[in-house]
Length: 505
Image: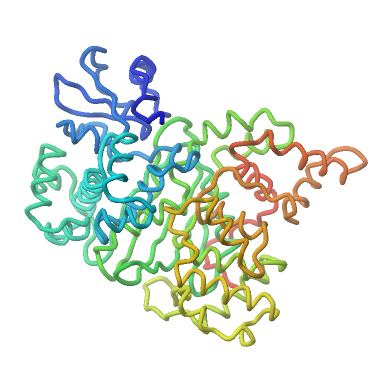
């Protein structure tokens, strides 16, 4: 097995550091022996001598080696590695679950169980791939969440400690001092807090360019009444989190400065601040925050069909999900109906079976029904054809029983096989779920009506159908980024977002 550590060629890494190449932020970290700190590759500080640096595949690995975070470049505030979703290795799947707070809630044993390994073997795999075991990786994530909460809220330090996932205030204090060479009080002194109570405002790191407007258009076009609302420049939705409900609002705009790390403002209102880590990770999934748009553009920009769309809307993302079960259930509801029709039907299901919640955002009134609730529904009472109702209830039962798992820790091929074994679930549904719920970057839907309509609109010459067929036959040339090519095609069909008012059904 070739590990990430073995792939970190020191010469190549040092060239990236010397050129302050922002594309490698989040891919590796640079530790400087003479200062005892670690940085992101684009750190603006003077480039250290080659002989004084080592390179690490994770912030946790640098911390485990005894280095503290640079106060200038904040190396923990970077998007994650795009390789996690491209390769979908055990390490990448584990990182997604760790970021969601699984280790904090279920321990290493729970993480290993979700991934299908023993705790000892999983620790060996993560150490080989990321330079740190699951406890160290979870500790690094807790430290990052704590720093953000200290610097951006007025929460008391005890509240920050438990919101970040620490078991005690003492553990929180010791970790912050070790990682940042500063006490929590000193961190807050540099940047005063701004919010309090159960509201947390953060900036979520993403790579640029970011086609934020296009992402907003997609989310607004597909939103479900009661669960989601959108307006000019923003999107908000309810969240069903491990310790209670919450909401998130994202301010989305285009950010074109290619190659740098940009930030998407996010405001979370949480019933229980212990859900901060999970809420942040789920919002990042929705944003496709770890995407490397430069790599996608480099591969697709020369294509005669997709290339012009890439240049028109650089940085397009594949919208992710805040709950894999919800995405799969919504996908079944949307089979063989228009998007507008699916929104209406899903809104009725939410009103009937969703859990009502009280929020500060007009239009956000319900949590999406969980799988266990829909598994008990009578298909005859659902507002859809009987066969699709049975498919929906069958999928909900499989999700509730754990026969199908969509928590970003599951193996994609195994999930697809299990989905296709369910009545009423075909390749289009299984592949769409893989793209949205499991962040698969290489999904293409050749039978999708929207894809064919988009290609027909882009076709030149007298025989559009023949041009569409040729493009679909040659879609393998878009690998491994076919999901992004798909989004570029769909983007030609998206209506504009309504200005200054919530989207209605």
